[in-house]
Length: 209
Image 1 (spheres, rainbow, N blue to C red):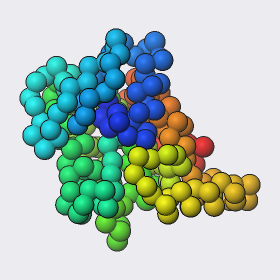
Image 2: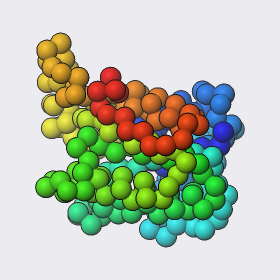
Image 3: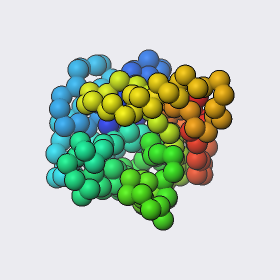
């Protein structure tokens, strides 16, 4: 299987990349990024400008797509910039992949994603889900983790604090509120991309423990 991976330098995407290299079912990975990746025999990693996506079909031709693109409003610098990364880029790349024959699309979304949400973050995530589903891939998988408990390149002290609290309270908390590990999310996404069953699947946070 040839995989198109978006967000390969991020917390979840980097784990997906490692798992894909270790999985004999994945014959090739195309991972367009803003900065170069380390070389690997099964990796093609073009450096692209996501605001001006190239039309080269070799970049967008794959059997399945895993999208782990994501940022925060603080990191992006504004609500508009956040929306470009978390909504526009996934949607625009999904369109290209669909045209070039991709059958499956796996999206790393978020718990609480809802187009009607009062919270901007959750509303954008819901809009991304809606627009990916509207493209009609043979198989669409929406993964909705809660708090992702793992090291990040940029400081997120509140997330680290929340992760520690949830970890300490794990024995008494319901599964639906526990933090999710990036390795577990990545494994669920890769397995979903390889699974050829048609239709739409939602994977909630409690299934990612």
